[in-house]
Image (cartoon, rainbow, N blue to C red; front, side, top):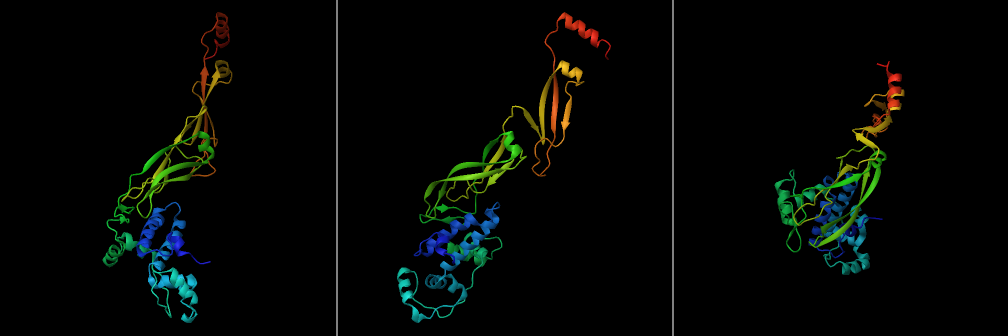
Length: 321
Protein backbone atom coordinates (compact mmCIF):
# COMPACT_ATOMS: atom_id res chain seq x y z
CA UNK A 1 0.00 0.00 0.00
CA UNK A 2 1.56 3.30 -1.11
CA UNK A 3 1.61 6.53 0.81
CA UNK A 4 -1.44 8.79 0.76
CA UNK A 5 0.19 12.16 0.16
CA UNK A 6 -3.07 14.05 0.73
CA UNK A 7 -3.55 12.39 4.11
CA UNK A 8 0.08 13.05 5.11
CA UNK A 9 -0.40 16.79 4.50
CA UNK A 10 -3.95 16.68 5.89
CA UNK A 11 -5.46 18.37 2.82
CA UNK A 12 -8.31 17.33 0.51
CA UNK A 13 -7.81 16.20 -3.08
CA UNK A 14 -8.81 19.57 -4.52
CA UNK A 15 -6.24 21.41 -2.40
CA UNK A 16 -4.88 24.55 -4.04
CA UNK A 17 -1.23 25.59 -4.15
CA UNK A 18 -1.87 27.91 -1.19
CA UNK A 19 -3.48 25.08 0.81
CA UNK A 20 -0.43 22.90 0.20
CA UNK A 21 1.99 25.63 1.27
CA UNK A 22 0.06 26.32 4.49
CA UNK A 23 -0.10 22.61 5.30
CA UNK A 24 3.61 22.08 4.60
CA UNK A 25 4.69 25.09 6.69
CA UNK A 26 2.63 24.01 9.68
CA UNK A 27 3.72 20.35 9.62
CA UNK A 28 7.38 21.01 8.75
CA UNK A 29 7.72 23.32 11.76
CA UNK A 30 6.26 20.66 14.05
CA UNK A 31 8.26 17.70 12.70
CA UNK A 32 11.66 19.15 11.77
CA UNK A 33 14.25 16.85 13.45
CA UNK A 34 16.01 19.79 15.14
CA UNK A 35 12.77 20.59 16.98
CA UNK A 36 12.39 17.01 18.24
CA UNK A 37 15.55 16.03 20.13
CA UNK A 38 13.63 13.49 22.22
CA UNK A 39 12.06 11.52 19.32
CA UNK A 40 14.51 12.48 16.58
CA UNK A 41 14.31 9.27 14.48
CA UNK A 42 10.49 9.36 14.40
CA UNK A 43 10.58 13.05 13.50
CA UNK A 44 13.09 12.47 10.67
CA UNK A 45 10.85 9.81 9.11
CA UNK A 46 7.77 12.02 9.45
CA UNK A 47 9.62 15.07 8.09
CA UNK A 48 10.73 13.13 4.99
CA UNK A 49 7.15 11.95 4.37
CA UNK A 50 5.83 15.53 4.63
CA UNK A 51 8.54 16.78 2.26
CA UNK A 52 7.89 14.02 -0.28
CA UNK A 53 4.14 14.67 -0.16
CA UNK A 54 4.65 18.39 -0.76
CA UNK A 55 7.18 17.74 -3.53
CA UNK A 56 4.71 15.56 -5.43
CA UNK A 57 1.51 17.55 -4.89
CA UNK A 58 3.06 20.97 -5.56
CA UNK A 59 4.38 19.84 -8.97
CA UNK A 60 1.51 19.73 -11.54
CA UNK A 61 3.03 16.88 -13.56
CA UNK A 62 3.95 14.71 -10.56
CA UNK A 63 0.55 15.35 -9.00
CA UNK A 64 -1.33 14.44 -12.17
CA UNK A 65 0.50 11.14 -12.52
CA UNK A 66 0.05 10.35 -8.82
CA UNK A 67 -3.70 11.14 -8.95
CA UNK A 68 -4.29 9.04 -12.04
CA UNK A 69 -1.96 6.09 -11.59
CA UNK A 70 -0.68 6.11 -8.00
CA UNK A 71 2.68 6.23 -6.25
CA UNK A 72 4.17 3.14 -7.91
CA UNK A 73 3.64 4.47 -11.44
CA UNK A 74 4.96 7.88 -10.38
CA UNK A 75 8.21 6.48 -9.00
CA UNK A 76 8.76 3.83 -11.70
CA UNK A 77 7.89 6.12 -14.61
CA UNK A 78 5.93 3.28 -16.24
CA UNK A 79 2.60 4.80 -17.31
CA UNK A 80 -0.29 2.98 -19.03
CA UNK A 81 -1.01 4.02 -22.65
CA UNK A 82 -3.35 7.01 -23.11
CA UNK A 83 -5.88 4.92 -25.05
CA UNK A 84 -6.90 3.09 -21.89
CA UNK A 85 -8.05 6.22 -20.21
CA UNK A 86 -11.72 5.84 -19.46
CA UNK A 87 -10.56 5.86 -15.85
CA UNK A 88 -8.42 8.89 -16.70
CA UNK A 89 -11.39 10.92 -17.92
CA UNK A 90 -13.28 10.04 -14.75
CA UNK A 91 -10.28 11.00 -12.69
CA UNK A 92 -9.99 14.38 -14.42
CA UNK A 93 -13.54 15.22 -13.32
CA UNK A 94 -12.48 14.81 -9.70
CA UNK A 95 -9.25 16.80 -10.03
CA UNK A 96 -10.01 20.15 -11.67
CA UNK A 97 -6.53 21.43 -10.77
CA UNK A 98 -5.03 19.14 -13.44
CA UNK A 99 -4.26 20.21 -16.94
CA UNK A 100 -5.50 17.66 -19.43
CA UNK A 101 -2.16 16.50 -20.66
CA UNK A 102 -1.24 12.86 -20.75
CA UNK A 103 2.54 12.43 -20.46
CA UNK A 104 3.98 9.60 -22.52
CA UNK A 105 7.17 9.21 -20.50
CA UNK A 106 8.23 10.44 -17.10
CA UNK A 107 11.26 10.36 -14.80
CA UNK A 108 10.66 10.89 -11.08
CA UNK A 109 13.27 13.21 -9.53
CA UNK A 110 12.48 13.68 -5.83
CA UNK A 111 13.63 16.92 -4.25
CA UNK A 112 15.76 17.02 -1.13
CA UNK A 113 13.76 17.55 2.08
CA UNK A 114 16.20 20.15 3.43
CA UNK A 115 16.07 22.12 0.17
CA UNK A 116 12.29 22.36 0.37
CA UNK A 117 12.49 23.44 4.03
CA UNK A 118 15.12 26.09 3.20
CA UNK A 119 12.83 27.57 0.53
CA UNK A 120 10.17 28.22 3.14
CA UNK A 121 12.17 29.08 6.23
CA UNK A 122 15.61 30.06 4.98
CA UNK A 123 18.91 28.49 5.93
CA UNK A 124 22.35 29.84 6.75
CA UNK A 125 23.79 27.42 4.22
CA UNK A 126 21.19 28.26 1.55
CA UNK A 127 22.38 30.25 -1.43
CA UNK A 128 20.84 33.66 -2.12
CA UNK A 129 19.08 32.14 -5.12
CA UNK A 130 17.24 29.60 -3.00
CA UNK A 131 16.43 32.25 -0.42
CA UNK A 132 14.81 34.57 -2.95
CA UNK A 133 12.93 31.64 -4.44
CA UNK A 134 11.63 30.81 -0.96
CA UNK A 135 10.39 34.34 -0.41
CA UNK A 136 8.71 34.30 -3.80
CA UNK A 137 7.05 30.91 -3.42
CA UNK A 138 6.39 30.70 0.30
CA UNK A 139 5.70 34.35 1.03
CA UNK A 140 7.56 34.05 4.34
CA UNK A 141 9.59 36.78 5.97
CA UNK A 142 11.83 36.87 9.06
CA UNK A 143 11.11 33.23 9.88
CA UNK A 144 7.32 33.68 10.05
CA UNK A 145 4.62 32.72 7.62
CA UNK A 146 1.34 34.43 7.01
CA UNK A 147 -2.07 32.89 7.30
CA UNK A 148 -4.98 33.57 4.95
CA UNK A 149 -6.06 36.51 7.09
CA UNK A 150 -2.61 38.09 6.75
CA UNK A 151 -1.47 37.69 10.37
CA UNK A 152 1.98 36.30 11.10
CA UNK A 153 1.69 32.78 12.49
CA UNK A 154 4.12 30.18 13.74
CA UNK A 155 7.74 30.63 12.76
CA UNK A 156 11.35 29.83 13.35
CA UNK A 157 12.21 33.34 14.53
CA UNK A 158 11.42 34.56 18.07
CA UNK A 159 10.65 31.84 20.57
CA UNK A 160 8.47 32.27 23.65
CA UNK A 161 10.38 31.91 26.96
CA UNK A 162 10.25 28.44 28.54
CA UNK A 163 7.49 27.73 31.06
CA UNK A 164 8.59 25.89 34.23
CA UNK A 165 6.30 23.88 36.52
CA UNK A 166 7.19 22.20 39.80
CA UNK A 167 6.77 18.41 39.82
CA UNK A 168 6.48 17.21 43.45
CA UNK A 169 7.74 13.63 44.00
CA UNK A 170 7.81 11.51 47.13
CA UNK A 171 11.11 9.97 48.26
CA UNK A 172 9.65 6.54 47.45
CA UNK A 173 8.94 7.64 43.85
CA UNK A 174 12.47 8.96 43.46
CA UNK A 175 13.84 5.73 44.97
CA UNK A 176 11.90 3.29 42.78
CA UNK A 177 11.23 5.42 39.69
CA UNK A 178 7.73 6.08 38.37
CA UNK A 179 5.82 7.20 35.30
CA UNK A 180 3.72 10.29 35.99
CA UNK A 181 0.99 11.40 33.61
CA UNK A 182 0.35 15.13 33.43
CA UNK A 183 -2.70 16.60 31.67
CA UNK A 184 -1.92 19.89 29.96
CA UNK A 185 -4.13 22.32 28.12
CA UNK A 186 -2.70 24.73 25.56
CA UNK A 187 -3.76 27.09 22.80
CA UNK A 188 -2.76 26.21 19.23
CA UNK A 189 -3.49 27.79 15.84
CA UNK A 190 -4.48 25.93 12.69
CA UNK A 191 -3.19 26.70 9.18
CA UNK A 192 -5.87 29.38 8.77
CA UNK A 193 -4.92 31.29 11.93
CA UNK A 194 -7.87 30.09 14.03
CA UNK A 195 -7.05 29.31 17.67
CA UNK A 196 -8.34 26.34 19.63
CA UNK A 197 -7.75 24.73 23.00
CA UNK A 198 -6.02 21.35 22.91
CA UNK A 199 -5.73 18.94 25.83
CA UNK A 200 -2.86 16.48 25.90
CA UNK A 201 -1.48 13.87 28.29
CA UNK A 202 2.30 14.05 28.80
CA UNK A 203 4.11 11.04 30.28
CA UNK A 204 7.07 11.89 32.52
CA UNK A 205 9.42 8.99 33.16
CA UNK A 206 11.00 9.59 36.59
CA UNK A 207 14.21 7.56 36.79
CA UNK A 208 15.36 5.95 40.08
CA UNK A 209 17.75 8.29 41.88
CA UNK A 210 16.75 11.56 40.19
CA UNK A 211 17.42 14.55 42.43
CA UNK A 212 15.58 17.72 43.33
CA UNK A 213 16.07 20.24 40.53
CA UNK A 214 16.20 17.68 37.70
CA UNK A 215 14.51 19.17 34.63
CA UNK A 216 12.38 17.34 32.05
CA UNK A 217 11.79 19.35 28.86
CA UNK A 218 8.94 18.91 26.37
CA UNK A 219 9.89 21.03 23.34
CA UNK A 220 7.28 23.55 22.14
CA UNK A 221 4.38 22.23 24.24
CA UNK A 222 3.48 25.68 25.58
CA UNK A 223 0.79 28.01 24.24
CA UNK A 224 1.14 29.13 20.67
CA UNK A 225 1.02 32.81 19.75
CA UNK A 226 0.89 34.36 16.29
CA UNK A 227 4.40 34.99 15.00
CA UNK A 228 6.14 33.21 17.89
CA UNK A 229 7.49 29.67 18.17
CA UNK A 230 5.71 27.96 21.12
CA UNK A 231 7.54 27.83 24.44
CA UNK A 232 9.22 24.69 25.78
CA UNK A 233 7.39 23.18 28.75
CA UNK A 234 9.80 22.26 31.57
CA UNK A 235 8.96 20.20 34.66
CA UNK A 236 11.32 20.64 37.64
CA UNK A 237 11.54 17.76 40.13
CA UNK A 238 10.89 18.67 43.75
CA UNK A 239 11.29 16.28 46.68
CA UNK A 240 8.54 16.08 49.28
CA UNK A 241 9.71 15.70 52.91
CA UNK A 242 9.71 12.14 54.26
CA UNK A 243 8.55 11.18 57.75
CA UNK A 244 11.59 8.98 58.49
CA UNK A 245 14.42 9.47 56.01
CA UNK A 246 16.34 12.54 54.88
CA UNK A 247 18.27 12.60 51.66
CA UNK A 248 21.81 13.96 51.45
CA UNK A 249 23.13 13.56 47.91
CA UNK A 250 22.95 9.83 47.20
CA UNK A 251 22.83 8.92 50.90
CA UNK A 252 19.79 8.29 53.05
CA UNK A 253 20.04 9.53 56.65
CA UNK A 254 17.89 8.37 59.53
CA UNK A 255 18.00 9.76 63.06
CA UNK A 256 17.68 6.99 65.64
CA UNK A 257 16.94 7.99 69.22
CA UNK A 258 18.13 5.61 71.95
CA UNK A 259 17.78 5.67 75.74
CA UNK A 260 20.63 6.51 78.08
CA UNK A 261 20.65 2.89 79.24
CA UNK A 262 21.04 1.65 75.62
CA UNK A 263 23.78 4.20 75.00
CA UNK A 264 25.69 3.12 78.08
CA UNK A 265 25.31 -0.63 77.60
CA UNK A 266 26.13 -0.54 73.88
CA UNK A 267 28.76 2.20 74.29
CA UNK A 268 27.14 4.57 71.81
CA UNK A 269 28.24 8.21 72.03
CA UNK A 270 25.79 11.05 71.25
CA UNK A 271 26.09 11.98 67.57
CA UNK A 272 27.65 8.63 66.65
CA UNK A 273 26.94 7.40 63.11
CA UNK A 274 26.74 3.91 61.62
CA UNK A 275 27.19 3.61 57.83
CA UNK A 276 25.50 0.77 55.93
CA UNK A 277 27.03 0.67 52.40
CA UNK A 278 24.83 0.45 49.25
CA UNK A 279 21.53 0.89 51.09
CA UNK A 280 20.92 4.53 50.16
CA UNK A 281 19.39 6.14 47.05
CA UNK A 282 19.98 4.63 43.59
CA UNK A 283 22.61 6.55 41.59
CA UNK A 284 20.83 7.44 38.36
CA UNK A 285 24.02 7.68 36.28
CA UNK A 286 25.42 4.39 37.61
CA UNK A 287 22.70 1.69 37.40
CA UNK A 288 23.01 -0.97 40.10
CA UNK A 289 24.87 1.32 42.50
CA UNK A 290 23.40 3.06 45.53
CA UNK A 291 24.61 5.53 48.11
CA UNK A 292 24.92 4.69 51.81
CA UNK A 293 22.38 4.46 54.60
CA UNK A 294 23.64 6.53 57.52
CA UNK A 295 22.13 5.98 60.96
CA UNK A 296 22.72 8.90 63.33
CA UNK A 297 22.23 8.16 67.03
CA UNK A 298 20.77 10.64 69.47
CA UNK A 299 20.74 9.80 73.20
CA UNK A 300 17.55 10.60 75.12
CA UNK A 301 18.54 11.78 78.58
CA UNK A 302 16.09 11.46 81.49
CA UNK A 303 14.49 14.74 82.58
CA UNK A 304 15.02 13.91 86.29
CA UNK A 305 16.52 11.27 88.57
CA UNK A 306 15.35 10.19 92.05
CA UNK A 307 17.86 10.31 94.94
CA UNK A 308 18.07 6.51 94.90
CA UNK A 309 18.83 6.47 91.12
CA UNK A 310 21.53 9.07 91.60
CA UNK A 311 23.07 7.04 94.40
CA UNK A 312 23.00 3.85 92.36
CA UNK A 313 24.54 5.57 89.34
CA UNK A 314 27.35 7.03 91.46
CA UNK A 315 28.05 3.60 92.87
CA UNK A 316 28.03 1.80 89.49
CA UNK A 317 29.66 4.46 87.34
CA UNK A 318 31.96 6.04 89.89
CA UNK A 319 35.04 4.15 88.78
CA UNK A 320 34.45 4.60 85.02
CA UNK A 321 36.50 7.26 83.31
